[in-house]
Image (cartoon, helix red, strand yellow):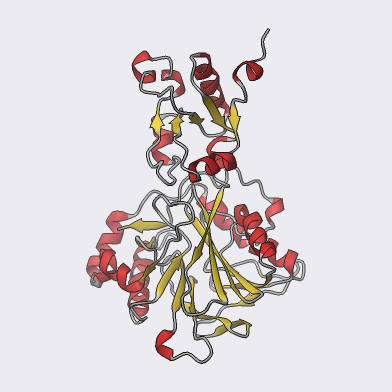
Amino acid sequence: MTDKRSQYGSLEIEPSELKNKMDSGENLYILDVRTPEEYKIWKISYDKHLEPSLVPLDKLSSEELIRNIPKDREVITVCSHGMRSKMAAEYLSQLGYNAKSIRGGMVAWNKINDVALIPCLSDRNLKIWQIRRISKGCMTYLISYFDDAVVVDPPCSSVASIFEIAQKNNLRIKALVETHRHADHMSASMSIARETGAMLYLSPLEEYETDQTKTNGFDLHFLEDGKRIEISKGLSLDIIHTPGHTLGSMSFKLETLPEGEEIINKEIFLFSGDTLFVDGIGRPDLHDKVDEFSRTLFLTYKKLSSLPDGTIVLPSHYGKSMKHEDPIFKSIGEIRASVKAFRMDETGFINFVASSIPPQPMNYKRILRLNKDLLLCNNLHLDDLEAGPNSCGIQN
């Protein structure tokens, strides 16, 4: 019997290889073979592949549906874990298509990162890398000034990317900060802190497990509104308590002022966590206090409105498709103009939030509970735990 692999070539493609093909502009045809219900909840949405074609595996034999699949393009099939999509790739290969299945499916695709550099115009010694999980919309930041670095909101699936950047640029990770206790992904802050010896800063209002007998004696540092985290000379973060998404949500303001420059040339960056996005607002309902937290979130936006219009907002999530190496940010003035909820009065805001809350993140209560315990990444099985799209915000 002829081996199918030798007859049709490799029928699988690694998620990282698929991303490289997308980034280089190859004319791919993405074919999702899951059910319409699965597709509606979560699908590949990256760069120009915003709406992949859908033909469920049990419908793939339909001549009417299959005739729309092009034979002059490489066909990439996808499902949840890579089993149905491999069967689809085998079937299509027998029909003469150049088809491959994503190894590990959406679960594996969920671990792929893209990196963009945020433009810093006033100080060439300051660098801000935006590390994005392209299927989930999670974004973390590696901020460096000369050789010293701080990391904001790192998920376990981005650890390799963080260390790769640090190694290539000879950076010392001196601190990690969490804007809040996350509900959609597992935090890597404790893992990175233990490996690097960096200080770990957490909100004291987020009910983390801080008993040193349970954290193996690791010293934690707590964030306080109005205080400053001094990473090194020239690199510091001002702490702003911005509750509403959670009770203890914190944002971090970074100001640049190169030596010898006039104050008018400074830049301000706001790392807003899940409080404020470039295309929407944080959701206030994940702790079962939607009315109370909606009012709190409204007051937080009033507080942030006092920042200069040119302040660059760098959130920890993004709700739409992203493009390779294209940084995601907006000024707070642009957000005020484009996000209608940011301009509403209190009554209108609360009514808008109540009518606009999206479906809750998958497994969010379990993820909240696990993040409370500050677990190490290597003690977690992340595959299905973190499945599903980003749903930590309310889109405009």
